Image (cartoon, rainbow, N blue to C red; front, side):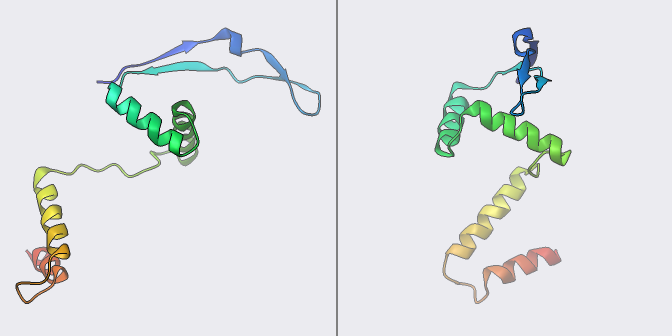
Length: 114
């Protein structure tokens, strides 16, 4: 199970000047540490680099989008082994020529009736 820990970093709580010269309080920053496999980290780093950002920026984007939408910014689903096998059978049937006189859509309709 990944572990996360927030660490208060007081050096990031300094006052900053805005473009109009006014002094504004900087937002406090905390460090978020998450344990992931080295393989997942490397793959994520490569993906985010190809999108023009580092992993930290991608994680911050995910957090801000989650807050903005007040939900996960993608749909979470549970797919069991039976559903995976069925989806694979549909994918194969759609890719292969029709042998049974019907189409892949006919097979979907038939299974929906069951």
